[in-house]
Image (tube, rainbow, N blue to C red; front, side, top):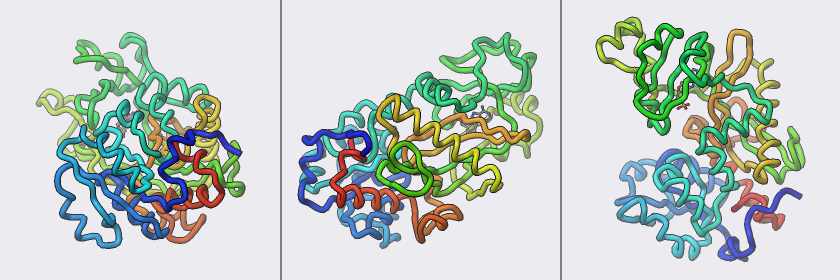
Length: 355
Ligand code: AMP
């Protein structure tokens, strides 16, 4: 038996009814709806203003019904409609960002996953505390520019798409650097980036066991980031800086990747430690999460970030990935979420996966 995350009151709207999968029309919602429909569940799309017209182009993913609100902050006001539909809200990055972690955390409807995770992910200090105490290797953080002894990336807090992030080859390149606001100076890891899509089920009693449940790897991607990915075509960083061009890391798309098979063991061990520590710290992270890191030439994996819900990179794998194909056929992360909800419902264990 896993940890009980939701009170009986929170789940009252679901009692004796088939649930409806609800999410905000953005980010990975087409995949979430598509997966829910494949499992026979009803779907509801929340939108600000009119439903997106391009959803009409995707009949297998378009939700059964839409609920529109005039402004983002009005989303919190649709709780009664969601309860009426026996909705389970599936969070994704845009949903939490648009509504704000605080408001999202207070939504009075059943949410897939453990919402206690929000407090540990959105504060970068707490995220580091969680990962480092789990024994996960992270890029070194310098307290001061004078300590710098290699290439660094300077990250401003809350910088959307890494706007204004600053790369410096060494301490000398940082001389005269005047920060434009609260920031961290972090070791720049040279290597190759991997964004690994895991799923933790506290219900499953087979497979790669972690805690009371099991861990699955459903896919992997690398992000396309503008303008950094193409910046080199214009010449050396220093020259670009002089010309007033700064690197940005705005995610514009995703590319599928696979990892050398011998590195999978390390990937699983890292993800397992993160889950185990989450159980100790706040009752456990449930469902999809993404471990984002860089593999160095010494084959060390350094994690710079984790996303504790479905990531948009999973959109590559609507009908499965080279990893999920080895778990079950046609298994997207969206569909995996629907399967978990159905399993929990049939076993009377919804309180362990909803909060
Ligand atoms: P973040 O805002 O932390 O997600 O970082 C945005 C992007 O910056 C990532 O997707 C990576 O491309 C890059 N990045 C972040 N941290 C590091 C690091 N320590 N070393 C190298 N690249 C990084």
